[in-house]
Length: 187
Image (cartoon, rainbow, N blue to C red; front, side, top):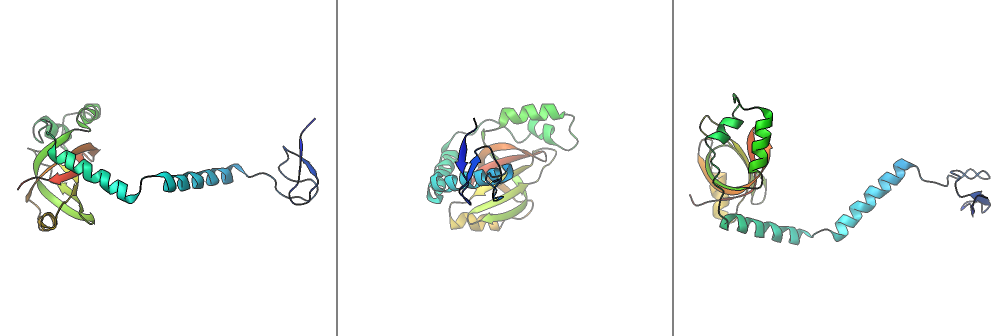
């Protein structure tokens, strides 16, 4: 025998498996789409309540930047194989570039490269694209400045100026090395 429950609208008995009350026509079950939307909203709310606060995120980033600045950089050159592999007219194949990316991802590098473009993302955060050339690889770096002096220095950079930085390799975009986060090194 099937289980029954009372319809919330008319109070008459209805099978628990019924989607619509046969007496009054009231919809009894949520559709799958509505359930998914509700689930996403609940997960978002839980993330907002139990996720890290902005202050905790800023503190974590500050510790990561300090760690990068103090850590020993890997001996990965922006020239040589890296430059050859990611240049536009490279003889390297996609699989070779993918394998090279896996090898360098997560490593800390310290390089000095020529600037191509500088964009301010937010307070103390700049997105800098460096020139790629025949003798060095190009990079997209997310540079975090630590003082007003560093802000002024970055905002005064022009195409062709050199920038010295230390940062973590996070991947490859358009044959350029992604470095995020990065900090300025002594000029």
